Length: 290
Ligand code: ADP
Image 1 (cartoon, protein in one colour):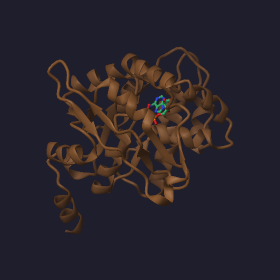
Image 2 (image 1 turned 180 degrees about the horizontal axis):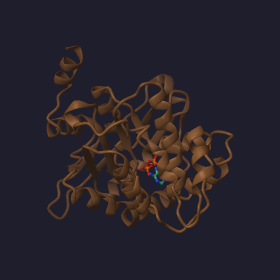
Image 3 (image 1 turned 45 degrees about the vertical axis):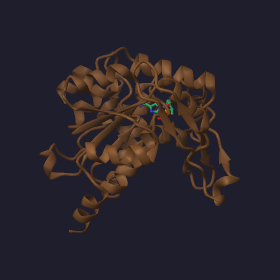
Image 4 (image 1 turned 60 degrees about the vertical axis):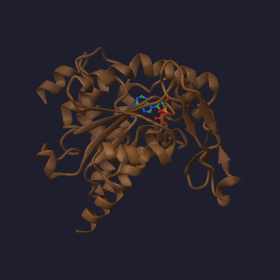
């Protein structure tokens, strides 16, 4: 913990008061300026041990620009591997749709395409991990966290991440994908109405992505995320390049980064991603049955 505390010596800032008991304990004891110890929430209680990675469930991270498909591929892998998919964007949206004290503040931040502060996001994630721990969850794939070097350092201080998958797509395609994104307001599933056909240029191959259309039951219930407008998507991309690209370097320098250039939509990309990970649907089903 001493190393973690050293990491956290930063100017005191306003801190979200979390609802969970560990959070309350922390806040009551922790804000002794100038040291802010909010990340103690992400302590060994949520990450029980540092066992050899072959001896426990996976702890993976998905990185990538807005709209690249982190949620799609992370949730598919989670289904295959039987670990929880923890997407901080979803946690933030749950919080802003609640009547909690943070809802309005978060709405303002998210709808402008800005990042939520490290303190708030760590608190929200810690609460989710505590709930998972209480249900006996083990392992995870994190999607959308860490997004700043500070978050990456905090995570590194509390657990060993095995692998970081960095999904990549051209920026013009990312914007089109975000603008075509739709969510079923009833079941929460993601779809995409955009049909993307982008010509190859500068020696890079062209890319085709078929729309991912909803079944008839969802078709009349589609909504668009408030932050999926062209202006906000461009701001989110700018912020990604500014704040989150350094996180790629953070993991690259630790030899944990696996780069994956998406060759197309799900039918083209999913089998290639499984190959890269030395996984196949079949293998995983067999090992689950054993
Ligand atoms: P994206 O499509 O941009 O990857 P997400 O659904 O992951 O979107 O996140 C939505 C919003 O939630 C972000 O724009 C940001 O405001 C907030 N958010 C999610 N994760 C983080 C994080 N790790 N740090 C700060 N803000 C976050």
